[in-house]
Image (cartoon, rainbow, N blue to C red; front, side, top):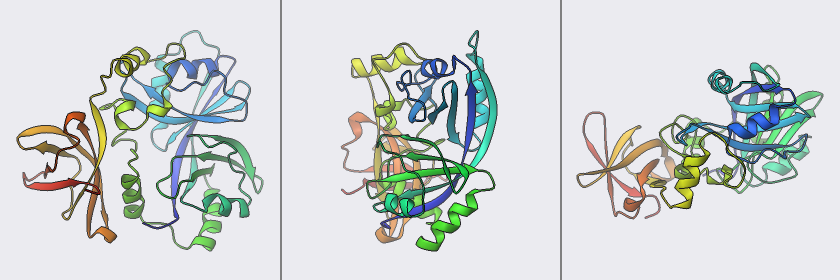
Length: 310
């Protein structure tokens, strides 16, 4: 894979204002947000009453009593409607999402490159660390995120219509952005989920690598009781697994071992260096060491898969 990946993206930003905004978001999601300092940010998961993933987002406390929720573009309206279902007597105002243009850099040297371009970087390194700043007089949001490669990664957001300036600066130094297949393959090889695939209401956070965003010690929040039981009693039954094959891997596809259905392929991408394909799937834990698996195409054809690196 390339040492440094970069690509364009877009995100919705919801704004919540009022003295109860921070407490409301703390009660609505999994991460400990109650003591989030002004100017800082943190990743969190909004879960259903059953502990399933509703949305993975980053919460920014831009000013005291003014918070932003950052989620992938096109998902903000749905999240806004869901939050409004649980709003009762809180003193807060929820505003419709605004689309921001984004760029992401994944790989060693990305931070140093952004510093040379004058981008203010997060001083902490946890998922979602960062906050609000300015770049060349333009409002900016910059976050530390899990890397697809190279150990460091950053997501930089600018208001819609201003993203081209940053993209042009990056392209001047790095050349053309990574292709969609390159980005998807790097994500899969890093074992990271994405919205609508691994991060969906089919799964809980522990099953798809989001456990670090779940607090089991803070007060109640939606889905907290279910998540606490899963962790306390060791009841997490599924996990993410990487696969490889010489043949194209269909998505979604039922995963089997022999005649036993054991999971689902959730993402797949070609990798030229491997002369084949890689995939992510969610499988039952008791089958994760199986020597081989089969994925069924929509036409009913069986494709043999191996665990990646096997």
